[in-house]
Length: 100
Image 1 (cartoon, one colour):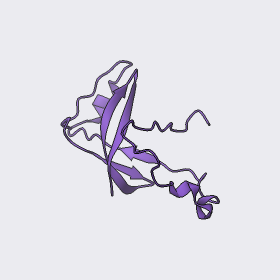
Image 2 (cartoon, one colour):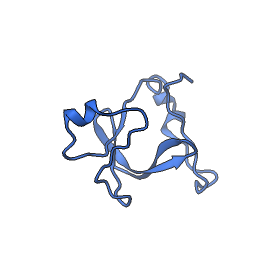
Image 3 (cartoon, rainbow, N blue to C red):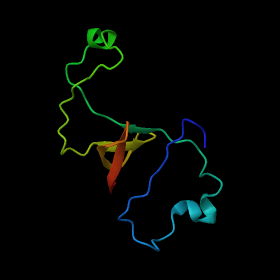
Image 4 (spheres, one colour):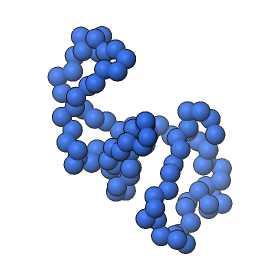
């Protein structure tokens, strides 16, 4: 796997014997390796160019995103679902909570 590729961790509540993923379908074999750009936004109203220029290592940017908010997960610009942020070790991750 390339170093920039995402790693998908299965959740413990996935049912055993769940239906096959579309990637297992022969029709998807030709396109399943095409790159996708995932984007999750935490908007920061009022953030300015000066704020950007003042960012340093270890800077914390406070958003107005409530912890109960489920921001949209976009794939190639299209909403694919909604997610929530989680901390896994020393990494920030998103958990998909709902498909579009």
